[in-house]
Length: 226
Image: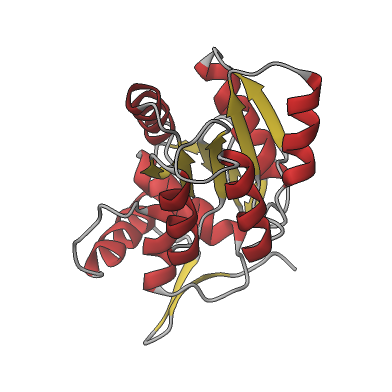
């Protein structure tokens, strides 16, 4: 899944980016309010981590949140701030934030709140994802098929998770790149084909059906359970 972090403190932004990336998310970073709005206007994100005190707009993160809500009412927004007043929290929630975390915070708490927001997102069908005999647990980043554990890299997990969250829909190569890779990716679309091949090799034993279907010229599909 692809996340946007809008944080003006470069050190904090880098720590958050590395933490989220190591947990399997594709992460883009913006350091000003206008850059955050522009990133959201250009690309599609599954969640936004948004600092309150941002340069570039009079209302800082509050203005960014309001503009995000004009573009997309559903994407989860986790607001970060050093201000721990009830008035500030209420204002942030009224501006459209879904959750609020006060600096300094523990990174494990940040990850837990991100996972919780993604579970409540309209894209999230259930805490555990099930399709065609495969079970995926986004909280523990684990996968199973027919009772056996399947070890996936962070990128393999991201690709499989997006396909399973959208089970029953054909997902194009460009859509997978948008949600499983960050904006620094400048490679070719065959990277998706490569990771689909890796997943098929890990998910399928001899005699088992391949759960990832290719729709030539359209993309990839994991059928939804009936």
